[in-house]
Image 1 (cartoon, rainbow, N blue to C red):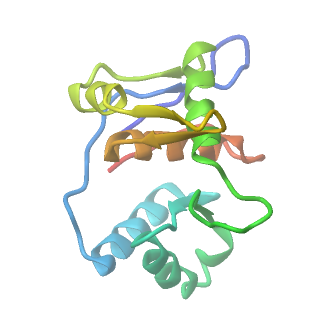
Image 2: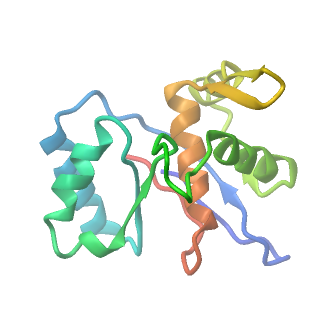
Length: 158
């Protein structure tokens, strides 16, 4: 479980204390797990990467009236949209949180190695190409959720 605290300065801080990955699961198993966690923690909003296979999970969860209006898809691959979320924005947010001391990561080999293996390449002097790991993608998207208003800063993993 990730534990988030609010320091005396009242600035948002995300502090992780432990992490547990979910083994590769079927869409139905993931949907059941999300519903179990939602019943346990009463999430105000649920952030899911809806690119690729995540789109199917979002479709399944959109059928549940209790969850539908709290879903917040995070997809940086939606080409052609006016408000496209750029991968650079997602990773810059993590860097800003880390450098400002608002994000503290548990000293876990999988997390540290996942972040160290991210590759950045500047293409044609115009744009960044970012190749992230599964872990770095998960962390960056979890941190992106804190940009949304009216949520308490806490990250929970299962």
